Length: 379
Image (cartoon, rainbow, N blue to C red; front, side, top):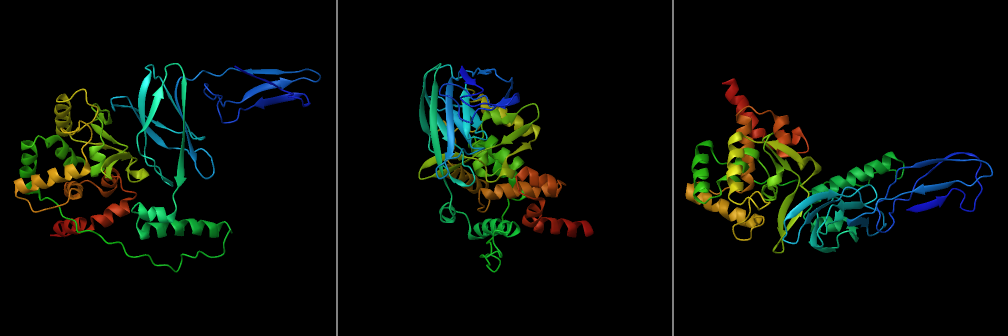
């Protein structure tokens, strides 16, 4: 319980006031930032009593290492001592994350999902919790510079686009007279050749997958078009049996021999994808083989997510056994998109399913398919 007197050594005129606590909770308590209204009468002291709820669990404070300000919208995954996921949590406007309901004392693990504008710290962080007490975790992130973007794999084209947009806004606000990037021409984007598995080959490919006991994973890929990292990061709880849909909210990638889970490629990549009934049935069969495992497709070697490289090796074996010429794992996504267009799915719907930032990008990516469809329609 925290007591505040309205005068605090100062004199106020009579009237109606409100008290708002600073966005930093007392140790062991959860912040209640709701304004408290009170009235002061001339010549009288007014006492305002604010009761704070005791907080039991993990309190994360995510801050910018340069400004010290809290970072909004950073998502964390919490795991128990056996590395099973417990839940997903996001920081508030002040950079705080409250994880309550941890009734068992012991060791937990926290993992930050990659957030835009900052160098991610995606290593598992060990946190020891005592039931009934608050465990505070101060977590800082370093802002990303252009050089760091290059190291992270961002293209020169994308960096130019971000800088141009920021400087253009500075011109509009009168901060600078001219955008210095106006005369700069970034290197042209190099598009990798797109190959797809032909409709008449898909049966053999799926049969090879069934022979290797990985049919549900590759059947889902060919009926959803998920990116490889999105597919492998799925949890059983991401499947909505009633709506027959998959929630895509994270992705996994391999880095220096380790698996790192992060937010999907862009904010448009966070989406819900409706899948066929047959796909749902296969996923249920898969889950029944390991009902206590939280992952949709646990690796038989580690019991956790497949490493993307391991999934790629399985894909290449399936192609060989099915007698299909080599195509990338990513081309399974293109195969899905191609078949969807050929079966009448419109560009806007397909764009949403693929998690593209615009329908125009989807149309540009698959323009060869739509051109062919137009020619066939004309004939």
